[in-house]
Length: 267
Image (cartoon, rainbow, N blue to C red; front, side):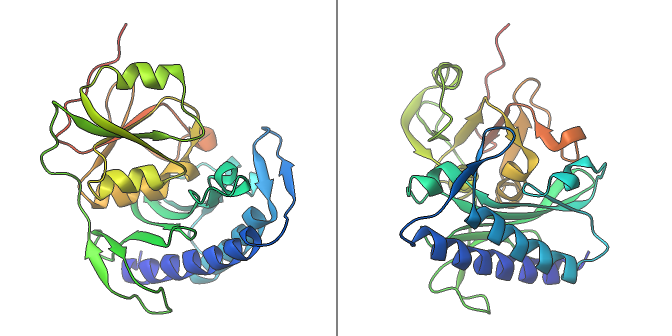
């Protein structure tokens, strides 16, 4: 894989998709439908998916592509592949809350090694560079990368008072009970893959997810977090979260800064 080219292509496609998404987001009205799993889908999901898929297939025709909005792509058995969630946080989009993201990642031998997460309504852009480090780009986003700042997890999280981030739309009693086993100084909530990015920048220390997610929901944020020195592990045994699983469904997981002392699952 040509990683410098990959970074450039993923960044540009994420920005173009974000522009298309915001056109629809700022319109007077848009259609919302339900997919077979009862999750919402909008014309913004579909327009962004078409744009990103076309761009990736043109740039990397020999790399398998998995994308949320193309069910036939979920039937593949692959270990190295591109994976896309064109609009993560559709519920946030529909409710016009802004916490939605464009997610594009490259998984190599089951590990998300490169990724981009773009939150167009919040104007935050995170990605891995060609050498695998994670950065946040600031300023106005043009065809060429602007000013970037390296990002990194909190190197010394205080286990006497952790900053925890949890889902806005998928918070439940089991998640609250697990968080309650830590000493926390504060909590915040965020939608979509922004939760990974908050851990990656040191704005949070711990993000547990005790709910159903798919690999396209997590791969890009996982790559950004890993490039910032963080880790994502399975909830049950604390082994690294792998990709290319049958059906691309994730188990429960924990994303965190390595200095956090994880507690074991009870029972």
